[in-house]
Length: 162
Image (cartoon, rainbow, N blue to C red; front, side, top):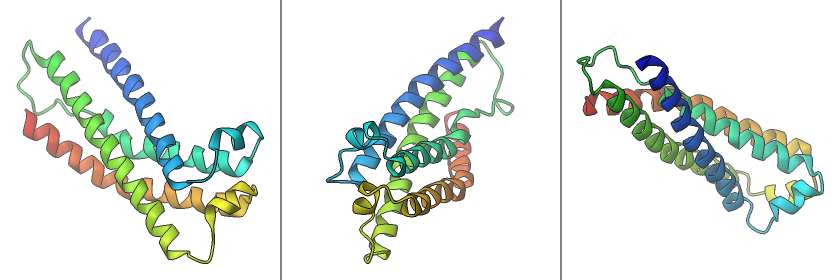
């Protein structure tokens, strides 16, 4: 029964912090695309904006995935395990969320700085799918590259807490 309650509590924490992560990912997209009304572009059916936003959300999920795995095998099992796991998961997700937003913002900023000949925002306004695919690749690639490092940070946080 304890494992079922722990699993349900972990699910609730993951859903709540996942929704926060999605909101922050959208905020990150708005920061990157200043001068672009994202909601209006999505309402108009601009696929380029949808592709990049979807890629940012997927990348945040990739970066946060290691934060969902709380390794309890090295812990001293006791009555407080339930709350320790929930605390560790919530803390790991919060730290992972901050790291995800920072790494993706940095990747987008560096990419935009390196491609000065292309106005990515203007191209997204035009619905340029080639630019959208390129930006999607940048953010998903960044998520894949930092996933392992985030996992190591999460393991360190867990070991320091318990």
